[in-house]
Length: 421
Ligand code: UD1
Image (cartoon, rainbow, N blue to C red):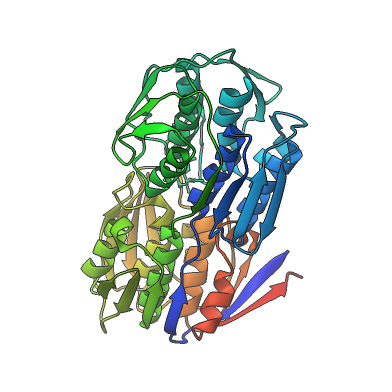
């Protein structure tokens, strides 16, 4: 296991390029299961979740080749229509192989993902949507066993207690592409990654309308062909880099980002007093001397993303004044609070609300990463803190960020990767 040793207080400077989106890549790789043709995905980030998805496809017998940012999938010759527990348990996104397997092969055995440190993450909406398309599903031995002679379009309301679901929308949309007739997904997730997936499916010959809105209509077709596609840039990585600049009082140019997909994050940074200027495909941040605390509530897109909540908290912890951070997607997603507290942050939790009393500066400490975005928050806090921080269990960070420690080092941060004792 590895850790990051961060000596805080260094200003960052320069230009950094955003990698391809993790959350686009994962369901798009699963979409390769819908065809017998060659699929080519470009701009794929180099991170552990992508490796896990590739292992799942290889485990089914597919030929997958990863060369730099290019992944090719040749879906010829299946060994099994199964995604085993040992792989699914490490990454929930692998559950979205269920819809494509069912639609193309009429059967699937996919492990239930199980618990997650950011709170309960059920898959009832995935199952509800696929059942509405006519799939027979049962849960046995921790697996979803699915069968369908033929899927049939219908109208599906896909909202849960916390609103729309990104991966349930992806799963059902992919399955509906090969169903007979028209499927209408109501309360569909509008996230840019769902739109990216829909655009891939359309390249494959699917007939989809309304993607990017809460009502998506899919007219089923008999077969889908392969695709060549470049994934969109990772808006969460871009947002994390913007916060890295803000928290260290640095000027940075973040290249390759799509500001039009980052409205809520950019708006909050501006409200906090950071100068953000946009040009085609790049975002420049110039922090002001004093920042203001901001209140934020996480919501489905285009609201403020839950995947940026921990990072914004790291910034607010070092912004004098009180800010209130409300989590409306995963009410328990506050594992980073106790660790930030070890660095001197003053945060009080009241249910799904965090009340942050910002201090001038945190102080470095040994801390433990608990999940992907929490680790990013601890790294950000460490960049600005006085003294040295050691962020343990950095494999969480490697699940979802493409060499972020290397990128930050190139910008002037003092970060070392080391083996844990
Ligand atoms: C995706 C993202 C993840 C992000 C999350 C919310 C990927 C690979 N991951 O995860 O980074 O944090 O969206 O933006 O794209 N829910 C149910 N029943 C279900 C499914 C979800 O109640 O069957 C609930 C969840 O517990 C949560 C909310 O719906 O409260 C939204 O979750 P969802 O959009 O499904 O998250 P994921 O798609 O798993």
